[in-house]
Length: 359
Image (cartoon, rainbow, N blue to C red):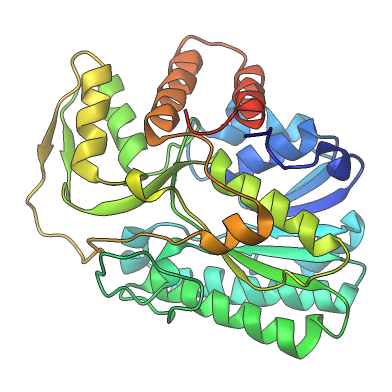
């Protein structure tokens, strides 16, 4: 297999507006874009955790601008987009946690649904944008606990406020595309990824951050649903898909303005228990046990079919789940040792780019 199909030359000098740049996925995307020579303008709330990828990489110092503001603040959002004059927009700003959505459903809908409306409305009014990629989630599908993966044309839905809000964001995307953006010459696509892992994620109630926190505290990791199956993948996998999709949206020929899945190979859709047992086998002293306390409902089985992205974008997963876990552990260890985390992050990006395929 040849090197990754992300075109570095395409991104050199491109003006990019990135919402959610202070978060985990947004931070990695900002680092990748700036390393390729893009002019990145970030818009997000203050980092949601301490520490955070945004702070340990001093990301503010390498971005063109970093606006700390709410996606629900229409006036500030419009001013930031006008000042950035972007050619390409990546929308990652969101309330991203299922369990938090049970505690704060109104906030979740306001951010994930009206935040999308605010962004697309601003892009439509201001003009000048060529392409928009709205990043939603694998959880936007109506989950029937099927054993087979979900395709882009499967029904949307959600049994919890987070999943439902992201399905709504997909519907908003489709409506704005057909009603406004297609006729304005702005190509709008949505992207649905799996459960991403990687260094720099300190979010609450996520498996890998919870494992690393328990490890650092020399505590036993408590697992809610050891048998739950998720499409695990390193964060760089879907980010490569977003970049390749944006390139296609800006190019001539076929219209790629539609929904896309970017998930791992079927073999890497593993139960939670498999993940924690692998991690415990790699880290001396790590232990876990099943937490049987009452909890809100979460889907048991979830898989993505990425056949369309493979066929039309020439995108495919490049790192195995084991490789993704090892990269995550290596990043965390480097951070604990006080290493230069920009250099470490870029090293992993470059290793990913030059990877010959599944490792």
